[in-house]
Image (cartoon, rainbow, N blue to C red; front, side, top):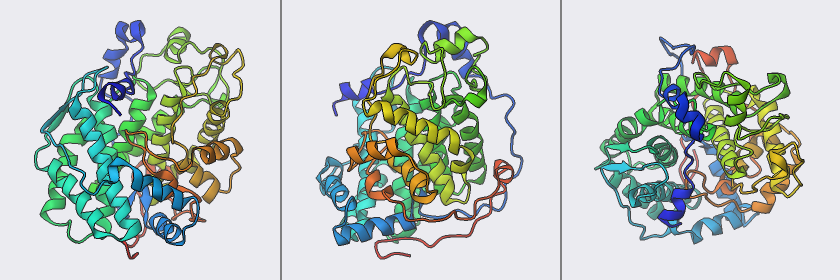
Length: 434
């Protein structure tokens, strides 16, 4: 993907005159009305537990070894990608400056290097080939030696995309690769804490919702890897605030819920924020009438957050099951080609969704036993799901036909919202298993 094409995939999250008239100021305001957790206790973090867990890696390893589908095809797709090249070379810099509507080479390099680190970590776990683990560690070490901060208007989204992939890669290696421990791993963790976490924790309520969901994906991913209970609790709260403000249910009332502190206090502002949409149905998203690509980003980020929380014993999937399954089915049917009715975006839907469904489908169908026929059909058409070159990568390999039949003893919503999360530790996974 060229830097020019990559720049087009950035979401500005600002809606012209409306946001210029005051919403951008609201986006920068300190959050109001959100409980601040004074103390957090009893969190026992599982590793690997950032989007992928031990059972999923073991399932992928077994499927590849047997030549079973869809894992065999997914594995071949990973191997054929540039991210899996044995001579992949990192391009670290100390400052990644990403303006709005621009794609300097450092922005592209950072995202690609993070995805390459995750790709090699995943291949190591699935194949047992140590060269992949060494390459993943080499890429991460190169960045942690120099990286200091993100700047520019797109800093939040850039740090979110790269930070989420970095944390996934680091957590897989942390769980079972002894050569990447001690000072090397600690330095990388410090990079996540200082060069990524402050940026992805920024408040952006008036931006398009895919921004805040992607930033929350990175936040919870880094929190789990660093075993930071306070930041983990913050990410749970942010998910619970933003998902209902992005995906609509009729039970919300005649208009969608507004993001906190976004200044959307009139029907006209809501209509503008929802890209001119005035009729609302179950599953509709804030960016549906923008394009399905950005809705796909939001669906993927929401699933990543819920999946990471699930591995830590918190069932966000269950809390938002009606909303998320409605959104999955609503957008899948139109991505599949169903004609949009006149009430929906004036009868025109931009069908540009990417490989964003496997994680959510793996949970709702594989674990919960829900029937999602449109989502299933679309996911199967897209298999093997590749990468969006941003923060989604190889999720057919990791999440197709998820094998977990039951929950890992999730805590209640009330308890987890105050971050009193208790779960048993899971075994570390490497190429040979626990």
